[in-house]
Length: 201
Image (cartoon, rainbow, N blue to C red; front, side):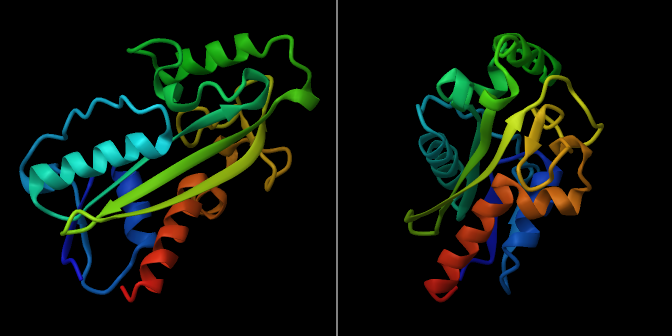
């Protein structure tokens, strides 16, 4: 069983969520910074979340010689044929801010009525073990896109996303514990934990 796993993120909040979901005895989750290095700039050229998560996990595994964990996630809007999808973080351009992306999304959905604004957050996590073998898991959070941003929490599209599980509140209006309980990444991590336990980890 690995003693140290490098996580392909510089986001300490994401790291804390991973540590909580994958609390296996003897595991220590670290970032590139914890190892005295800069985060890797992995070009996300895949056309699916799984492909991009694999690219990042394998890049970190090869660079640091450790088991590596990566995720890729984004928003899929049914009225936009699944967009922004893998381009969620750069929907309004390569240097887009969260506000830029949210503004573009609202513009694209301007004429779409409430009943047709269904969407979901989707996440895929990939663990590459010491021998280079992959374990993949995914999760989703169903909901809809609101007509205006609400809430001060979260990030990305959270202020516009209304989860089915919390009627009337956006993801950005939830407490962290509530968000983690229903989030796409939380679901993917729980699925990964189950898969690893089934393998005796």
